[in-house]
Image 1 (cartoon, each protein chain N blue to C red):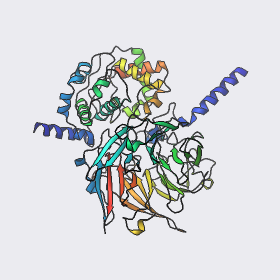
Image 2 (image 1 turned 60 degrees about the vertical axis):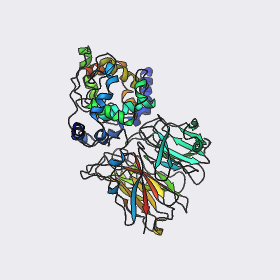
Image 3 (image 1 turned 90 degrees about the horizontal axis):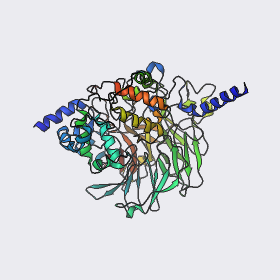
Image 4 (image 1 turned 120 degrees about the horizontal axis):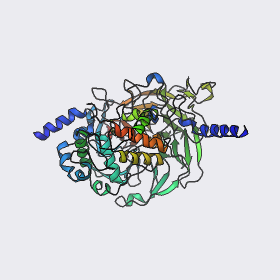
Amino acid sequence: MRRNVAIVLTALLLGASALWLMPASAQQAPPPWKQGQPADLANSPLAPVPQPPAPKAPGEIPVDKIKLPAGFKASLWASGVNNARAMTWGDKGTLFVSSRVVGNVYAIVDKGNMREVKTIAKGLNQPNGVAFRNGTLYIAEIHRITKMEGIEDKLDSPPAMTVVYDTLPKDAPHGWKYLAFGPDGKLYFNIGAPCNICIPPDTHANISRVNPDGTGFEYWAFGVRNSVGFDWHPVTKELYFATHARDWMGEDVPSDRFDHAPTKGLHFGFPYCHQGDILDPEFGKGRSCGEFAAPLIKTGPHVAGNGVMFYTGAMFPPEYKNRAFLAQRGSWNRTQKTGYKVMMVTLRSGDVPKYETFAEGFLDGGGQPWGRPVYTTQMKDGSILLADDYAGAIYRITYQK
Amino acid sequence: MLRLTALLVALLATGSAAVASAADRDAGRRKSAPCAACHGPDGNATIPGTPSLAGQPAYFTHWQLLKYRDGRRQDAQMAPFAVNLTDEDMGDLAAFYAAQAPRKRASVVDAARVTAGEPLAKQHHCTSCHTPALTGQNQVPLLAGQDLAYLQKLLRGFRDGTASDLDGTMTMAAKPLTPEDVENLAHYLASLTPTPPPPR
């Protein structure tokens, strides 16, 4: 009898450790994109937009379809940048560009009328995060953060990648990371939930930080399903971030979020409460949304907000100063596509932020994407670059009165 | 003109697939000459352990070539062929193989294993991505009628976490399989008759 109890207990414990992978209804975990799908939607045709294995040729990229406010203009700045994602500038003017499933990191050298694209690392584990400081490029893959010292002088024979920090989960779902230096000189990155919806292990669903020498790891924000874009306000130096909300709960719920984490330790609700006011049908039982930090903006269902960047340049009209650009890669878990835009967020003291469209036109006449805006970065002259991981291209957006 | 016609046919056949639309199927046929010795002139291989490429979705073949070239997928026989391929070569080859009609391999399957494998394909959600007929789509390969020894090798690799995975999905899917499940699934998949993916 005692032995049986022990076996049952052991089984329970083993089961519990694997529980976050297991939906309640099925024997085996479905693929991550299908996890949490209710039984009545089992035959839904909705599925993630497949990532093309190659970038589009310049002639196949209808950059003139990008619609912008009056006075703004988009042009093709670089093409052939397969799966182009996050961008960071080197001290000497090199643009470093990350990718995800293709596994490359690129260096782009601006030669005036043309851009030279060099692949400086390949075969990596979804290297979505790149950050640069003091001559060193930092790269975040799913399972580790590494660095290349003195890279800008060695673009044609890149130095070895040395490990900065690798005490990280290895889960692929939402394991890819955004990486950026905070105003405190620490490296910030996300550790996403390893699922669509689950009780994540304590080590997941957060924004974390570590010193550039790999010491001092700590969690900054909790209950964050997956944030792959954040930035600090140029004046207040406080952190703002975008979050992707769960799938398969409805066409119009829950909304993705734009959040504010001025202090360490806030909990943003995942997996208990979505969009600040809807309890999860499974995991929200017995919880209250009042326990958690509410979103600053509900950015819309399934819009997939990625890059967040506060504008500090001088080229755009004065009202653009300190506005945040939010690049939305766009929906898959919705019949009518949403997102596929770059939005603007204007923070207003004592009032709700203003939230409006900056760039759109990435869907063709049939409602299918020809491009997906993922991240922005600012150029020295105040123009901005916008990366498109679907077309494998980078656009430059300029303003002229 | 012939080339233009082929391109138009490719455009019609692949719909939204931008990469395939730029790819040249005739060029792919020419470039596939070195591949034919193992994979067959039309991508239907006969050597046990070597996969057939006929009818594989273009995105799938293209992604695998990319992984061989970049060293993410390692194979002593494939590496020398893949190392010098350009993006254009890979697109052309992928478009060529996608357009070839797949034939069932001459694998000897065990009837009891086939029967045991069939429910596993649903329980383990293979059909969620590989489609109900297991003919594949986009970056996800055609499995129906593939070579038994190749299916066994890949499934074992994914289960052990040693096979190259595009995004982690297969490693997660194969982890709960027992060695017995792997055998049964492989026999079931090899027993199916492949049909070309439906026109998109």
